[in-house]
Image (cartoon, rainbow, N blue to C red; front, side, top):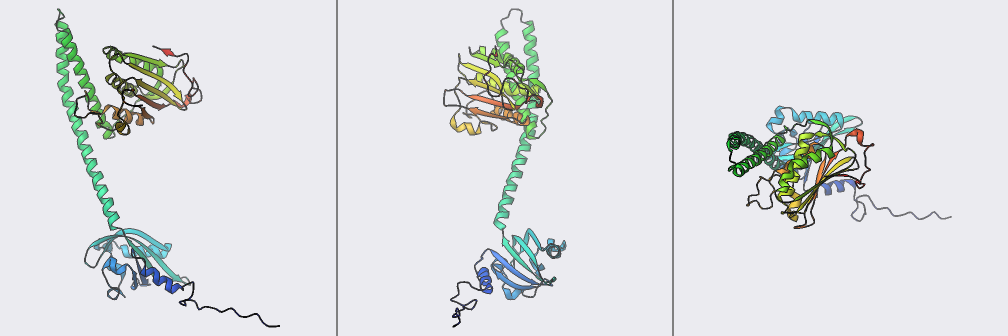
Length: 401
């Protein structure tokens, strides 16, 4: 019986072979990895191989560095701290040492690199190291530029907050005597001839004081000094009270102001003064941007684990381009026109809601179609499973005023 014919074998690494040998693959890697330097070291950390982008990255030809310790690539500061030896100690102990640091080029320029030093062992004995280096100077510069910008913004914000604090202090000190004089004149005006102008003065002083309080809040929030004094609240009862404090403003424009609250208490744990401030700001804006004889609604309900307060109006609405930035500081539709404020109210509203771990959203269907703001604040924990009415259900019958 004849033996089967032997298959022809192609030597490993032959030019006609489909698979190049490992030496050829390594050479291809070194030649075709323009962004990585491959540095081989003997066990005494002297350079034994200088491949890939090593020459382009560091400026040294291979003949200039062979046999030299790798330490000369490190900065003087890192050498004084013993970083080259520390890097090798970690590699010997853990198998690999990785870090980002400055290295020196031949021309003295600094480059920021990521390096991975691997210890090479044979039969458990250290025989050398291999280091792969990639340059990241541009990324480092970009990070430093961003950090510098952040630092500059932080300094600007700190300066702004300090200015706001001083401004509000001085203005409020100046407003107090004006209000006192107006009150004194009002008491001595037996004929009543000055009743209207004095009322205008007092109203404008109150408006200025409110704007100063807003600026003070901006400064406190920016400096991280906002404090909340939480207590148990019934959202419905608070909403009724807030509406009554602002009803006269709506009446002065012949606007109808409705408040609708559920028949059962909606309990939250929140800072009462800040909740009043949130809703007052929303109602104040609704009155300001709703024409005479318009309508405004304030109502609350429960959705999932949140108490929801909604303020809706038939006003001028919000421009579509403003919706994404409506809660940003100093946002105003017509910055060049005086609207009786600084454009900080809605920013403060959002910050105060965030501080209560809630959130706010706005909806507007277009110009002159009004707007709706919805504030969601977490229910008090004990009420999550005992709330009434059920989540998302209509409030009928409700308490309507």
